[in-house]
Image (tube, rainbow, N blue to C red; front, top):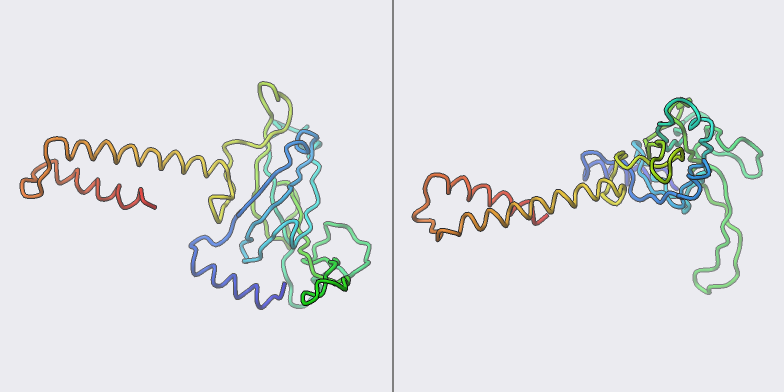
Length: 236
């Protein structure tokens, strides 16, 4: 949780990725969603500033009641992950033992961990640690002094779940990795399957009449260039 170390990691990430933020991994509680609450069993995401939110490892992330929002209008709305911004000239941490609203716009909260001596494995002691004071937000909430990324869209269910809230199966949040969205992963899997099928069909076309580079002409040049491109990208 050292700011200088976090900024160094964020800077390296910006050099490696053109869009260096988004969801890394997410697991939503389906049972809680049916009870009109959004709760993540785990959530790992990189914010636009480079801050890593890893719930429950290094962050607090209370569940969000969506009953009123779902009852209004068409029942379709987005849910965001929000994290307070860091400020150089004001407090950034909720002090230990201080009784304040969980949605106060301070970046950190103080928690305790039971840590044993790593040399002996005994002599456990409570150690104070800083945890990120993250929260879930609806799209109409105040986001002043927060950085946010969209996580999901809630829609009204159909068929056996008619009238119940459910995650929009077509919504894809910003993702740093493919593991950040099942929808995105399935889309890419389908795309890879189509590329592989096209490649195999093209191989048959190119080699069907007996291929020789010395006798290439006309359409064969186009087919070979296309096959070269498919070979290059289907292997990734």
